[in-house]
Amino acid sequence: MKSILNSLKAFVVVAVVVLFCTGCANAYLPPVASSPWEVISLPNEVTPLDIAFTSDANHGWLVGKQSSLMETTDGGKTWEPRTLDLGTQIYNFSSISFFGNEGWVVGEPTIMLHTTDGGKTWSQVPLSEQLPGTTRTVVALGKDAAELTTDVGAIYQTKDGGRNWQAMVQEAVGVLRNISRSPDGHYVSVSARGNFYSTWEPGQDAWQPHNRNSSRRLQNMGFTSDGRLWLLARGGIVQFGNSVMDLEDWSDAQSPEFSTSWGLLDLAYRTPEDVWVAGGSGNLLYSPDGGKTWQKDRTVESVPSNFYKVTFLTPDQGFVLGQDGVMLRYNPNSSAA
Image 1 (cartoon, one colour):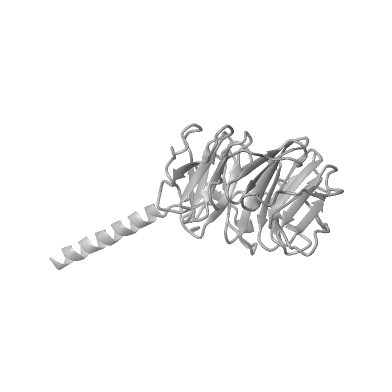
Image 2 (cartoon, one colour):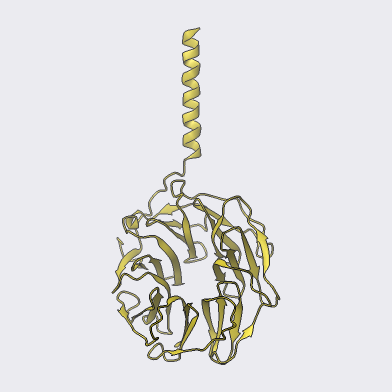
């Protein structure tokens, strides 16, 4: 009888181990075959927050905390700091956008800068003191045209170079964690606490609120390459919308890497299938098939930074922005970052 009990215990232990290993099969992702990212040395340790290029793919601008403004003329390989006379106030420049050589910058405390000559000269655009919230994002839409948002979800458009602004929504949505715009003008925002998300499309008078679909607080949201929603939630969760029309229809939540529980922070499409996700502690995940399977860029794990933003301006021009002056540049010809 004792031998039978011992055998039964051994069987139970083996079964539990097998079940545990099966459940954690994605605990550690396989590495990418070759890292396409190279580490770029910035001239200071200020955290960069956004990047944009003029009509010249080699000429771009990087903005960030502490009124940081940097310029490149070689496609982002090297950067030079630029200083503007903005008085004694220190700004966090959170967003930059160009249409040709006309560019816009916004940040906090509320500020807007405008250039029409690729950044040779910048002027400060006066904004109303009644503007709800603090300027958060800006998108250049065409000649003399731009769209700005604030950290409470106000949306405004100008068509005359910033002299006049038209409110696109009647009421702000509340303090936001982040806000994202699709190429066709749709928006999605995440509430400051990550409790819910809201959407807006051109023609609507107000934001439309949506409950999150799990107990995990939302970290970030945006749009897929074909206009559906994606979300990142606490604990390293990734989820994709099933429909462009139904904004509450979601595919099953997935944890690309179980061990990456400290958080994923941003997602970007390089092509309709190539997806990159950036996160804390040097985490950079890659999916070659639109999020079905995942790999990890282990070459950049040693970079001492949280990766806050990943963006592709074209399929061949991408950047990852991290804290304290860390930036990665997409270079498919690079064998190591």
